Image (cartoon, rainbow, N blue to C red; front, side, top):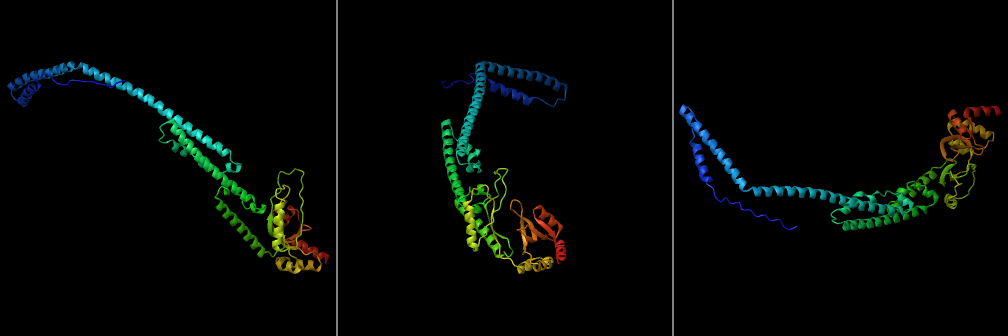
Length: 384
């Protein structure tokens, strides 16, 4: 379609309008507007007729002039009509073009996110359990589509973004894998210090190393503190392993192996750690506990027992009873330490002497034979 060209001649070829206008304006200025006499009113009536004729003359002259340019008016009307048609067509096409561009953009973004999700799904399961939202952040993909004028440049930008994100995922996955391997190399007892392993392995390797050192140091300090203050028989030194797995058959029973070790503290600890390491993965094995069991004596029992039990202990000593353990911590059926502490206990016989009926009831519920202090005193008096 060629360039539109229109040529008009807008010159007035003949007119006495200026002279006629000046005469009319002069008569308007001369008109008496303050009517007082009959002559004034009569003359004004003649002027009204004259001015009305002038108005009609002006309108007629204007219409005659417009009629002389009717082809110009028709041209202007046709131009306006074509402009409107062009506008409506342009708006309709522009709407479809924008919709198609949005469709192409959304399709490219969706395909890019699906590509990243598929790449994440190829990583180890423990990496997939990490928070991967940053890799699929919709705003990152939308940013890559900005100022891309063609489908080809838009797709290229999305592909470059995906390649960069895949590199991020690969590096993060390698870091998680290395951190997981590092924690798995720890002895079983040490691994129990990291219940938040899934969160921890997402950190930088140095952060993981620092956290491992910190938790081991804190555990060792707690153990050392308990060892320094361990005066009571049965004081817990170290615990290894985990509860017996629920994957065992329903007819499985619980057994306990009692192993006495005569060694110094360091050797005893090393033995337990090695035993736990050698048996790691055995679902039938529960906790392995290392306990300090110092040689008991009646003097120790009398020194550590509550005042109320002193008289009973003295009678038991005279009657040559077995020396009891003072302040014995009771474990439940899962070998977990409870908050019940028996004032006097004979673990081999699962017999105890307690102060209150509440403690007696709890001891009985945990499989112990229990006697109240007053009952034990009466029994010794009868024996005496």
